[in-house]
Each structure stands twice: as structure tokens, then as C-alpha cells.
Length: 154
Length: 224
Image (cartoon, rainbow over all chains, first blue to last red; front, side, top):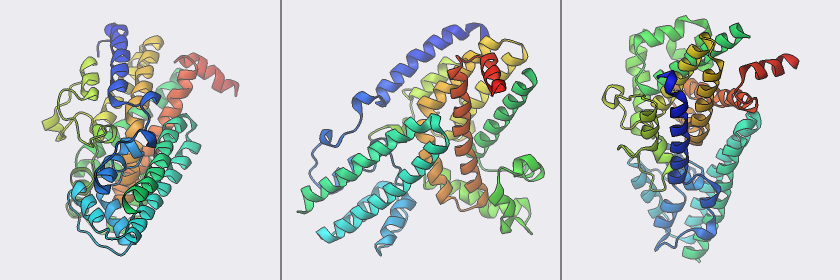
């Protein structure tokens, strides 16, 4: 890097950060709130679009996470493409009781991750707002899971 | 102040270099020997230090039978080490020139050889950590030259990159990496990377509170 050009680069950096934040939708104006979520034709699409994206739920559900969550309710899925594993997991649901089990597993997983976020936020206070934002999204996602149940299984 | 500052800066450079290297490519014998033979580095890998498989197996066998398999599982097959996946609602990676991180690198003339690095996009965790490494190196050079104002400006760039990019997604990835690692080395590497980026952000936040002035920060710390 040419140090002489640093001030100019700094200006460009700030402008890029601004644009980056706008495109990544990380400011308060577009924070996910459950009332702003779209309507979906079925619970699989709803869950995939609203729960699975880390940017919306604050949680990363990896392939191993999906496999472990399924195992908790006595099901076994082979490792596959993440989206396909998620669909297999959801298609296992045959009754409202099954969906309750699935939702409970998602909530348990979310709670486990949020407890880790709280621990790191406590130990590294400068990062607290970053973890708090993810916890807020995760809490909204848990409420959304209840909404999915009511909307598609009652 | 200068000696302490340079020592601390040297440690930051070394740790960013180490975690960037581990996350970018498979471990080779040279890197493994470096980790094993340097007590300071090995202390960052407490589970690996105790790992029973490390005993009675050559480094070559350890790499081929365990570490490469784990690297493939964690970085190529089962997990997604790219920022855009964690920041986009469609859960896709941005592999093209529209990647905001790539645009940022371009503005700093930081060139990423994707083929050479064997990554699909510039927002791979290893590349983002290498960018921090390069920034820390530039900051160190400015400090050695006595250019404190310029060093502070580079530290501000580091602060912003950590805050607006790495910390927004890497902790999520690293927590999964830590729990899904199949070897002690990658478990420890995830833990090291997570703890280090968070503690480095504490340091940079302190510097920010002091208007990125090393002198002010030093006075404050000495005062305590």
C-alpha cells in the first residue's frame, strides 16, 4: 500500500463501507421483525426463507446441525446438500405433533447458540452490540416458528 | 512505549498470519512442524498438544489420515467459510466482482489470487484474515518509521473491517467449526481465531476511544 495515498484511500473506504452496509442491510432500518416477514405457500418454504438464512435468524444451521437435530427426535438423514437435507427433515413432518418436535429442536439449537453469544458478549464487551443483534434476530425467529405452527398446523 | 507497541504489533501480525494460513489451505509438514516445535505457538493449541493421535504417528501420516480429511470436511464439504453466505438473504455466495469485500480489497490494492489460494471468493475467512494481516504489517511499518498518525489511520481501517465484516459473520462460522471439527488441531484453531479476533477488537476499540492515538492509549494504560 502506498502510504502517501492513505487519506484518499480512507475516504474511499468510508464510502465503500457505507455502500456495503446499505447493500448488506445491516443497519437498524431493515432489521428483521416477524411482522414484516412474507407470506409463504407452505411451511417448508417459510422455514427455509425465514429461519435458515443466518442473516435473518442470527444462527447458522449447518449440515451437521440438521443431522444432529434430526437425531434428537430419532430420525437419521445422510449428509447431503444443505438445502436438500433441510427439505428431507421438513418432509419427515407428518403431523402437528411432529412439527412440535421439529420446532422444539430448532428452538433448543437457537437457545444453545444464543447462550454462547451471551458468553462471548460478556467476555468481550466491545462486541456486545454485534452479538445482541444476532440474539434479537434469534428471538424473533423463535416467535416466527410459533407463527409457522399456528399458520400451517392448526 | 515504542518497544511494547512493536512487540504487541508483532504478536498481532504473527497470529493473523497463522490463523489465516490454517483457514486458507491444508496444513503441510512445514506448518505442522512450526506449530509443534514452537512452544509459544503450541500453547495456542491445548487440545492438539494432548491429542493422543499425535503421539506415535509421523506428521505426514497425521496430515494425510486426519488433518486433510478434517480440512476438506470443514472448509470444502460441510461448512461455508464465505462472508456473503452469512450476509445475504438468499444464502448464496457472491463469487463475482460485485462482492463488497472484493471491492474493498481493490480500493487498497490488495490482490487476491483466487486460483492460487484455492478459494471461490474473496470473502473467504482465510482471505479476510490475511487482509487484516497485511493491514497490521503496514501499521507496524508506520510505527517503526515513527509515523504514528498514519499507523493510527491504518488501525482505524482494521477496526472498521473487523466491525463491519469479520465480526458480523466469522464468530458464527467459527463456533460451528469448533463444534464440528473432527481433529484437535482444527478445534483449537477455531477457538484461537474466535478468541483472537474478539480480543483484537477490544484492543482496537480502546484505541478508537483514544482517537486512534497510541500516545493517549499508552498514557491511559500507564495511569491505571
